[in-house]
Structures are given as C-alpha cells and as structure tokens.
Image (cartoon, rainbow over all chains, first blue to last red):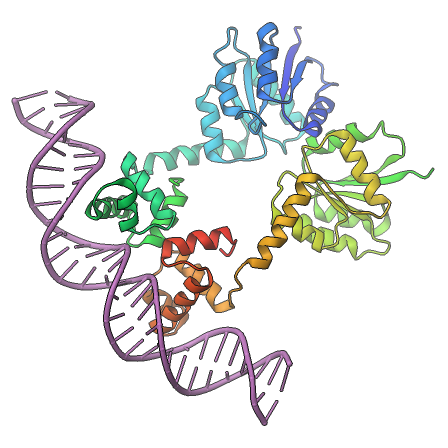
Length: 208
Length: 208
DNA sequence: GTTTCTCTCCCCTAAAAAGGGGATTTGAAA
DNA sequence: TTTCAAATCCCCTTTTTAGGGGAGAGAAAC
C-alpha cells in the first residue's frame, strides 16, 4: 500500500517534534517535509508535493487561512488539515471556507491525529467533535447576525473609540444629524437602547 | 555529574512528545515523569520528587498558576518553569508571583529550552527576551493603573452589561444618585468623559 | 422604469449621562 | 482620638443620547 506523504507547517519546534514523534512509528505515513513559515511552505511546493498538509493557523509571516487558500489552488492540491490551539468558530469557519479538508485541536491524542490524516487523505472531511459543534454554532451565529452597512460599521468603530456624535461628524465630514441617524439604526439593528449595550452586543457579534 | 530530573505537566500529547523528543538526547537531563492534569501532578509529588517542573498554564482541571503555588510550597520545592502559548503580561506576572523560576513560550527552540532548564536548576531565574519585556510592561501598567473600590468595580461591571443607572440602583438597592456618583468617580479615575470611553479604558486596564 | 437600499439631513421630545457643587455615616488605620 | 477613605445621598445645569417622525439624492437591482 502506498504511503501517505505528510507535510507539517508550524512555527513551534516543540509541535513539529511532537507530531513527528507521534507519527513516525505509524505504518502508512511518511514525512514529505516541514516548514516553519508560510513562505518556506510555498517554496517547498514549487518543486515538491505532499498528500496531506498539517497546517497551523498561527504562522509568523502569514495567516494559515491564507496559506490554505494558496495550497488548495495548486494542481494537484494537497489535502489540508487545519491544526490550532484555538477552537474559535470564526477561524474554523474561515479555514473550511478556504477549502480545508479538516480541522483539529492541538490537544488531540495520537490515535485521533492518525485517524484525521487518513480520513482527509481518503477524500473525506474530518472535524473533531468539539470543532464540529463550534462550526455549527458559528454558522448559526452568522445567520442571525445583524448586517451592517459600511457606513454603520465606520460609525460603530468611532463610537467604540469613545468619540461623541459631534466628533464623529467632524471626522466623517457629515452633519451630526447623520451620525445620529446611523447611531439610531445601529441601536435598532442590534436591538439595544444605550451605548454600553451597543458595544457589548457589537463585541458579541464580532462587529468591532 | 548528577542528572537533572525533569517533570512535564501539559495536557497536550503533542507537546509532551515534542518536549521528550527535544530533551531525550540531551546529556544531563532525564525524565522524572509526566502529568496531563494538575491533580495527577499533585499525586505524583506525594511519593516522588523532581528537580525541574515544566508547567503549562492551561490545564483541564486547575490553572497552572495555582498549581505552581502548590508546588513551591512542597519541601523540597522543585524549580518551576512556566510554559505557555500566551505571552500575556498578567499570566507571566501571576506565575512569577507564585514563585515560578522562569517562563518561556511554546515556540522556543530546543537549545533555549535546554538552557532554561539548566538555568532554573542552578537556582537562577530564566525569562526569554520577549517574556522579560512583557513582564516589565505589565509591572509598569500595574503601577499606573487606576485603583477602583469594590463598589466602583461592581458598578462598572453593570455598566458594561448595558444597564442604566436606574437599573443598577435597583440591582444594588441604593438610590440612583449613588450610582451617579460612582459613575462620575469612574469617569474621573479613568480620565474619560463618556460611557464608550469608559468601557474602552476599562478594557485596556483589564478592569472588566 | 419603478422599487429598494444607502446615505444624507432635518424636526421634535424625553431620557440618560456628564460636570459642578456639597453632605452624612461608618469603619478602619494612624 | 482623630483622620481618612468609602459609600451613601442630594442639589443644580448642560450635554449627549435615545426615540419618534419624515424627506431627498443617487445607485443598484429587478
């Protein structure tokens, strides 16, 4: 049976060592190489290939999310398994939207890592239990999240910075009435009735 | 020469494997054991000992900060080297206040990990460059951070939750005038002049 | 070519917050 | 015992925000 060639992208020496230790005794898996930055990963794929890329989200030079998009445009595109410490819904969602084949957390045990690699290599998606729940919650959140216009986002930003309507009006070269209107619309869209609640809700809906 | 007996506390199999891989070839270092939770670490130290504990801050059952305090009360107390993904000033500060002998980030290279272990074992403190800067910044921040009374913190909390003065007054069984006074004092202490600025400043000063 | 959305601006009133001032009680520290 | 900080409450005025309404210009969608 053909070996699955795994490429690791992570800027933590400890994690690279750990993954290699967890996988090297595994029959069916071999290492194609490692990269500690997005750029060195891209450099590798110019002349080489791999079956599965274990891709950290936090890289020093570029987001793992962007790198995922890059890798999935290659021909042939490797399978990409996102790996991160954070089970943040937005990260997971963005990664999957960029074409990732799976997402796992760094606290996963060895057998699950192996399972995830073989699952994505065979063409299926792999999301661990918690991650899958987070993704569903994130999608639900997005559905019912209020949609703000560009101008409203701008006004919201300056409100959060502590400016009064008069100052914001100055900043955006419009009348105070206009900012007043935008502010009222923001309160209405987020279903709140004062500045503190507005900022709380905006923060919860990741609008800041 | 006597070996340094190292004990690892981390709930990530990947990190444990990585540390072992980075250290097992190192002359002068041997493993005393591992624990994947605070409780199993405590259990180990009932009948065993170690020279240096590599201690993750994020553990499933208890904070690494608390565990550090526990370990440093043992006789003889092991040296404790805090290890975390986060270079958050408050974490570093809290850890050192609990008696930790050093603090490093999980992205450190092998040679620095080795150096850190030997440094703390010989009785000295070890803080990597970035961590040291963060700790200094944190101490400076603390010095010039406004000091709020208990009641002011309480009022600030409810303001951040979006309650008006009238609602807060109801909640705390005092008159609206009182909340008004507290609110004015908060604005004065944080040197701001509206609710949005208050919340921004409070967040920056980690008062929420 | 009409509808819809966004952004702009205005009117009005009411409520809330901001900015001054001062005052009393209580409990802990000096 | 006095001093001091904290918490409580009140007065006043001004500014800012909230809540209601409406309306026009321009661009995109249908």
